[in-house]
Image 1 (cartoon, rainbow, N blue to C red):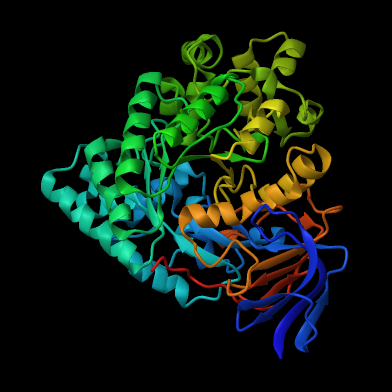
Image 2: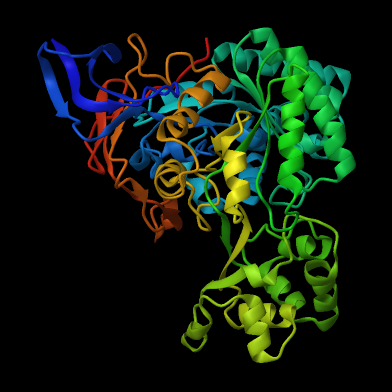
Length: 562
């Protein structure tokens, strides 16, 4: 007898091949047969009229902390995701010595906009090594599977302490880092991640540790992924590093990919309003890398890049020196500086008048008042800062800061960064060298929610805009990330593969409007995303979600690359 049979569904097997109608039989957490299944099963699901696909793999998350208090990795569990990859952007919670815990938390607070109170209350710190962190996850209930990367920032902090944010490493220190990365990979990490983004800082204003690494240090640590013969390397350097730095890094990344003989997941390619033609050059660069034999994949987001923030927590302005300095000050002093006329002149130069490209586009017609706290300002919600300034007869910065100060810096703003030109986005999506996802799930929790990246792809980009076939979209969500990261038994519906399956209605699948809830440890706020049209999610052969509701099962596993 089978444990579960899915009957009469339209099979999208993850390969990109044309779909077909068949039954799927599952036993002992594995797919046993696909075709006409007549044998009995403990549970049978009628999938007539529905799509049956491999569970989606979210390869770019920051669930490192959230999984310790939220076993469902909500709201990813509602969108057909069955496996998440943590430890991206060089940021991990392990390895970590007790004296470095606060500093490590500070990287997540500033770079990934996570509330300190939630991290302090929710992280149990039962580990020192990466292996011990994985074992801490092992013993907790999990709805989804978890694959981990080991992050450069944590490794560097572990070996060098606070010197990690001040200088390059010595030969002895690099050797210690090599041993730690080797041990982490042997424990089952699916690769190594590093961060050279010049706009990424810790909460205390220091750069994240990996930014102080020499390129030789980075390459030596990456080579260990090749030595292990499994997993991948993941980098972020920020799209608005100087052209000279990007060119130098790209050359080195190609060398690393060639020398490791492993996939390298590089920078995000997005159509950006601040540099509208940059995406084309980035696509050309990644294609050239493959011509040279280097498997250097890019990634992109299926979501229009919208960020919500207040002047209490924003990191949107960190590339501008005066803004960055002010955002590191205590709130009372910060507010005083925002009211200072001389300071405002400097802020206006950097955020309005300066023409040098940065990730913040300086398009104040794309910065909107999202939510106000005082009734007399309610009429401003939905207006751009440019509209507010024009209606009030003020300069951009005066209108912006006057509103924020009048509301004790609690005004929520939203800006559009990228992915607004749909023709460009379609070309990026269809590139064989680009992974679709980059949800950042678990990060920027009080500003945005990226959980619905896959349901948005299936609904808006496939059903409404016909950007690609449903078969190809599912391949991009399943087999492609599984192949790149070396998750060998997932991403396809084939006999012998792990039974991670999502059953959905292609005609109704969609992502709902974001909602703000207060369910983090200590009641801190975050945005969540519900889904429509996802009928069943099966993880390791057990039904996790049924019509949007958790069944009470926790079948997820900590995956190990070995």
